[in-house]
Amino acid sequence: MKNLLGRTVMAGALVLGLAMSMASLATAQEFGPPELIEAAKKEGRLVLYTANFTEPEQETIAAFNKRFPFIKVEMLRAPGGQLITRVKTEAAAGKLNADIVDHSDRGDMLALKDLFQDYAPPNASEYLQDAMVAPNLWPRVTLVWAIAYNPALVKNPPKSWADLTKPEYGNKQIGQVFAPAGGTTWTRAMFERKVLGEDYWSKQAATKPALYPSGAPLSDALVRGEVSIAPLLYNIVYTKQRDGAPIEIFFAPEGAPAIPYATGIPKTAKNPNAARLYMNWCLSKEGQSLMISTQGNLTSLKTPPVYPKNYDPKVVKVWLPKFDEFESLRKSWVEEWNKLYGHRQ
Image (cartoon, rainbow, N blue to C red; front, side):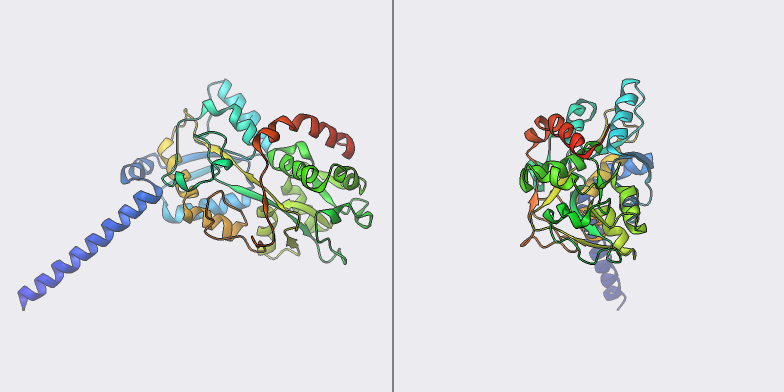
């Protein structure tokens, strides 16, 4: 009986040990090998510079910390233009404090690609190459534009991008982030002209929309009723709707402009292992699924694990700008946009 009990205990221990080994192997395959995780644990922190919105990024960090509670993520969030200026200034002075730089403007990041170390996540082969501008810069976040409105203020809501040119929505009922604010808004403006027509800007500008420097204050203005309609990045407005704000959101039938970020680990990173672990987790299916299902992002994975709420891939197609046009058309088209909308930089 004792021998049988002993063999049972040993068998149980063997099964437990095998299960733990398999779990460790799975973690190594998805997030990195045990030695990376141990090195990250010793560093214990990382500094993230991001152009992403504060609330969604805080949720991402909280989810990351459920799996890796031993890494403290210190976030510095700034609009795209301000962030890239800070990165350039700190790098020129030899004092770049970031362990990760996460930016919506792939063009600006491509110009700085030599600042970043070689890096690829364990699942690198699962990502669309069209979403990348350099081998060391990865689409950790992929955002998408939608249209939101306050149903208490809009009795005849828009149903398309074209509807945002209707005179009935004039006199600053529509809020809009100005085109030169960063890569995300330039993507939206480029989509408007290329897909909706060369006269779209002049028709839309005629409604005299209220202009905002970024989506954060515009989404707050929409909730407060200062504007009643606004094209917005889905992840900033969806989280407000999810938390009870009086907002309706839809993806317009003409298309959904998408923005893959460019995210890299500087060569000067003080916590490179913690940075790699955070990047590996964010780019994994677990991290991408979290950002899609709870924040309303899209993904640059070849096969999306899930889709955001309100998004039907059979009805609405993603529009991704060609990168060469994204760069070559930008200066002249933004200047034209500024004139039409009466915006001074």
